[in-house]
Image 1 (tube, rainbow, N blue to C red):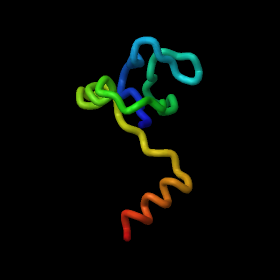
Image 2: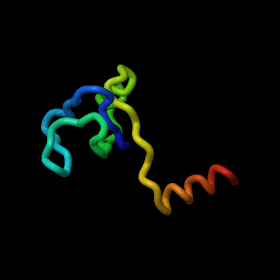
Image 3: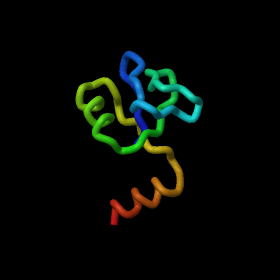
Amino acid sequence: MRVIATQHPVPLLPGTTTKDGKSFIDPAPASPVEVEEHAYYRRRIAAGELNRAEEKSGAKKAAKNDEAKA
């Protein structure tokens, strides 16, 4: 899932880093970060520290939307 921090940088799970080598998820205007589906991030979303970002557009998203319409 792709997430972005709401106000302040949010730490990643201990022992993990982003592709850039960062250990925090930055707020906008930074780009959303791809993280694994994990209870840690879901709790931070529920607490309002993180927001889910839109999926990248592309063929997979278009196919998913077409399936939903059918």
